Length: 415
Image (cartoon, rainbow, N blue to C red):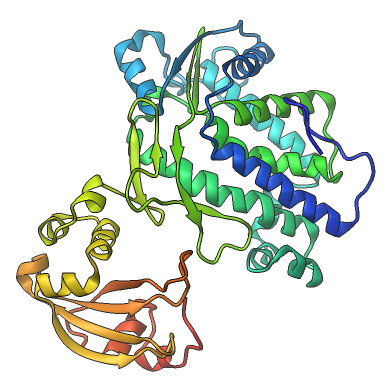
């Protein structure tokens, strides 16, 4: 079943419960494809949607500037700062809907009002979102079929299948990584950012309720939702200002892998040998299993660089690139003790002493085997920093969970 561009599908009759969930999964996958798309932006459709959003707040069509990446958008602002207005309210201004608000803030207010009205049509209030409920947590840990069999409410199943799944993939694993890497501390210069394809996670939340027939939005609200949906289908990130809108192309490369233990199609960024995300102008970021790392981690990891690295997660990724056995030998780590892992039967715990000259202070590292299987079928080995006065591997493993060694020994299996 296809949906016309810029509109929201409405079910013409109630669907059986299992069919609603199957359709919700299809809607999720559709929006995930838009959220990870590397196709060139459909500039005409994107500009038409932005123009209509401007019209709804009584603003004329802006002049459009297209850039190749979010980084290029920042460069555009720095080249011509006079064209851009900070999105924050003037000091001392009252929080009203008046036209004295900056344009971006007025758009944000309009969107907030829209979502409040749509939440009411779905039967939600800000204080009763089902993702804070035990039903959502249960649904996230099950397949949709098992969740329905367990009589988990449909709203909780939909939130797990669509909103939380796409939020983990497009907001947490993708958008937030790209923003932190390419636009660190750029908020005051760029103002409010809308994320185009990466807004798909919240667009899909409302879209799915319309498509399965559990909500019908008023005509004006459906029209506005269609505009945001069009932008999620058509473009990358964008920055609205008075008389001017800067819009970014989508990336030219995106590489992902399934999120371990994900039940609902969740993805995370990953590429072993090249950037996980690359834009046409060369802006890029390297990501290993969801962790943003500098390029040297992929191209030339060495013990010396590892020891200079202050970020624990980056250091861990670099060690895994050269292999723990090689790192232990090159760094001169000394084996303290070995024990079977009560929380991961069949695997061992290896406790190493780290000499002062390695990390600048005496330390211990516990080498463990992950209880969960990675997307490639392997169980990853990783090291945990533990206090230097711990001599027993099981006690060290318990300490990492806030448990005693005896308590850790009673675990059935850790993840």
